[in-house]
Length: 311
Image (cartoon, rainbow, N blue to C red; front, side, top):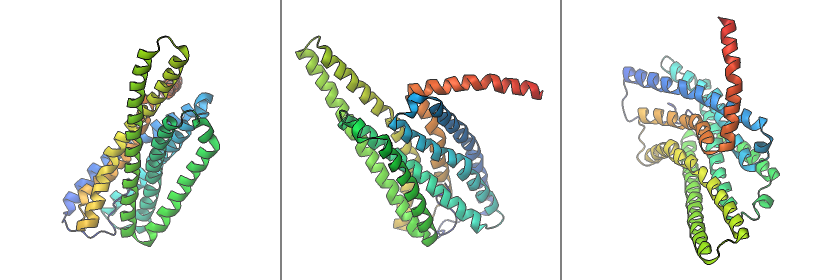
């Protein structure tokens, strides 16, 4: 995401042409492998879901698919435009490319953080209303919410970015902050439920030994809590990738300073989130990991045979 692009900010810190060139070079070198990782990783995730009927039926996996699609487009569209905009900027100003990179970057990275917020809320609702979860969180409702997120993010980004970039950046910082706060609240709630449930199990085990019904309920709840906690790692990386940009936006809004290197690399850190997410999916979700491994084993012989034919 060309989150803090060179237009629209007063520059208080002088950056020489040579230093600027070095910053752009390092930034582009960092984005290139992240772009490849994002494309390859998210294609594997989406392929695994499409080939697995069990995964396709899960409403939680639908949210992960929405996140994977937005992350894939970040690698496939946003990062190439971002790299091109950075390189061209060293010689001349291409306003059309700059605006296109900015709008698409805000749009797709905005969808990513909004979807991660929905995932945290989904896991919290799973624990709060685990007996009624399947009735409340239906496939139709999840698809409707996903569509609303994509359409509302696209329309707001396009309108505000063209209207006033200064206001747009301030609103972006506010929205990211709200998403982080919601995620934080959700996982604090998940942790409190998990802790309370652990104490409840210990009390029940002391009071009633060998009750099969209680054992089954406790096992089901324990699996539900584990499923919710598995997504906690997404929250950690969300903080790592998005908080630096929020801090810079707040500083810019209060002291009106533009630190060129910091703005530039904060965009790359946000891009990194789209590359890391597929790794986190496979690490924390066993069924998805096994399906990805199976697809990888199928592709490996094909790649080898193709390489031998080329030789």
